[in-house]
Image (cartoon, rainbow, N blue to C red; front, side):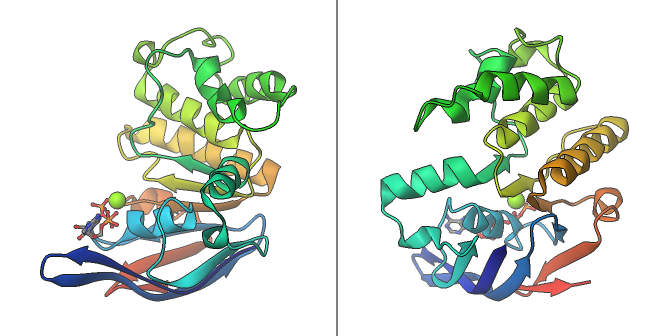
Length: 221
Ligand SMILES: Nc1ncnc2c1ncn2[C@@H]1O[C@H](COP(=O)(O)OP(=O)(O)OP(=O)(O)O)[C@@H](O)[C@H]1O
Ligand SMILES: [Mg+2]
């Protein structure tokens, strides 16, 4: 269960705090999927970063499976993110010097040895249609292929929460559709909580729950 209670976020600026989010509250159960929409600058990425424990709320709480990551010390927080949250960024953020397989394995290199990781990574890469590209570098992949590697990397730790910031924003309509289909299939298979930020009405229409960020609050449509 992901539970967000009264999350408010202010950024400090020279002229005083700038409020981006105010009393955002919602909850999602395992297997739930939601899209977050809203104009540029409305705070979608800010909210996603807070859900991903990459940034702290000014006030309010976020819990995943009953645990509040913001009460943890730095090491425990890093482990929490690594084990329980997968993040897909708009620009894939793959390591250019690493192969496709190595990129997917990166999250498994920290913490306790994870001997099943290579077979899970291979299975995920097969699943996303890149089983024959394991040794390719990111520069040797198409945009949609890179995004599929990023999705495999986000899922290799079998996270409870999968967060995607405009995962199809840089793709043509056909590739965007294929990546979205894959995302839903993997989400269904792993029963994650899935939250996707998107500007695309086509992608948002595929979600049963759609939120809009407007005037600093989240409104369900
Ligand atoms: N570190 C920061 N310090 C001050 N203001 C910030 C900081 N980060 C973001 N902001 C401001 O917060 C607002 C929300 O930014 P955010 O990146 O969350 O928007 P967004 O909804 O994701 O927009 P886009 O659709 O363009 O990606 C913006 O007005 C931005 O200028
Ligand atoms: Mg953004």
